[in-house]
Amino acid sequence: MANQSPLPAVLGSDTLVHVFDEPTILHADLDAFYASVEQMLDPRLRGRPILVGGGIVVAASYEARRFGVRAPMPVRDALALCPDAIVVDGHFDQYLELSSRVMEILESVTPVVEQISVDEAFLDVAGSVHLLGRPSEMARVLRRRVREEVGLPLSIGIASTKFLAKIASARAKPDGLLVVPPGREFEFLHPLPVEAMWGVGRVTSRKLRRLGIETVADLAALGPDVLVPVLGPHAAHHLTSLARNRDPRPVHGGRRAGSVGSQTALGRGLTSVEEMRVVVLGIADRVGRRLRAKGRMGSKLTLRARFPGPRSVSRSCSLPGPTASTATLYEIGMSLLTRALEASDGEPVTLIGMSVSGLRTDQVLQLALDVDDAVGPGNTKDQKRRLLDSSVDAIRERFGRDLLKLGRSARGDDSFRRLSEKS
Image 1 (spheres, one colour):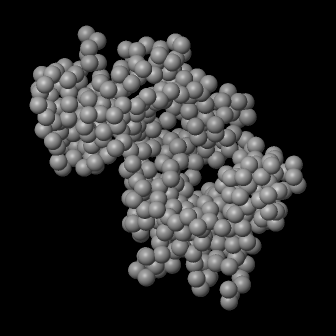
Image 2 (tube, one colour):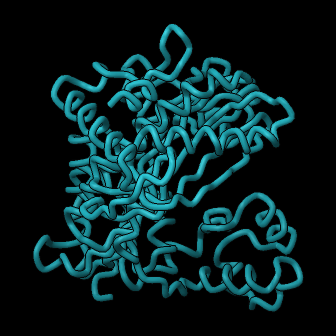
Image 3 (cartoon, helix red, strand yellow):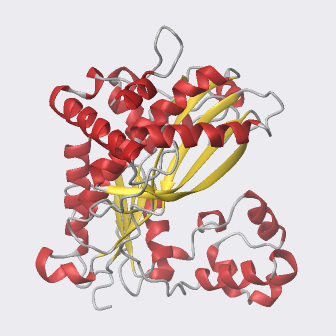
């Protein structure tokens, strides 16, 4: 490259990247996402060490990470490292909503966005450069918009491959931007410790260091045959290729909205099925509302129950047709929970989650005959439930979500079911 200036450091919001050409693959990663959301929702938590989770740390703020706290680890071990940490159960419905808003902002610069988790995504902005300018300028706009419109910090790495962009975003944290100029990839990559590589965890790290491999450069200098007896053929070839920045994987757009889900953490856990009914009803309400807001229906429902340990059990059901009905999701969800509890041995349930997949548009619905009293997509009972859902959604949209809440009546029966059957 003509201008061999030093590799750029982590970029602040006012720093320019002085390169003639820039790579076009971005990795955008929300910093300590769950913990950052909790600090945003409750200003009293800002600047303080936060642990999200019940028995296990799901996420830790940077203030807690300075004490060696990492996810996942038992909360009791985290509190031994950081006694002043504040433990919160988490607002998982908020996480999903905020994630969706961030992804919409990312899609404002390119349609080629590949979301790989709730808090991170790859972007390929090659097709947007002629309209929006250099990738680093787009990244600065994205970071500013996410901060101003959502209230969360976003770190971005820019490089010539997905692998290198992800490493760059990790090195940019917290709340930074890092560009790896073309032709300077090895200068950036090879001095890093092997633990910086995507896919090298504690076990693999120990194996590599026993062989005297401490940096990415050490790994790149070896042929995969040396590592096959230690790591196996797939991992050996994969890691040596990445160490040489060989990563031909393209960014795949349109990978969002494969499913719609929600979950609720239950602290130390519940053992009462009646109490779990209220939780499942609330989750079904959130999932159904999100499906209807997106104009989607789903044909597969999956329920996950987590027990102490942590140990989780998942049960799934393929529906006879697509649905977005809160009541239908609740009834099937309870059926799946009953099956999951068969494997519990009476243990408390510490988290319940539900997701709907097999999504399709709700613009076309095949009507069905009322052959029995069951709820089927398109039959009379299902249509009544659709009308009820639409009425509830409209009232909440106008007067706020908290005006109507689904729960249990004083008699102990399910109030939503009673409303549904009387519609």
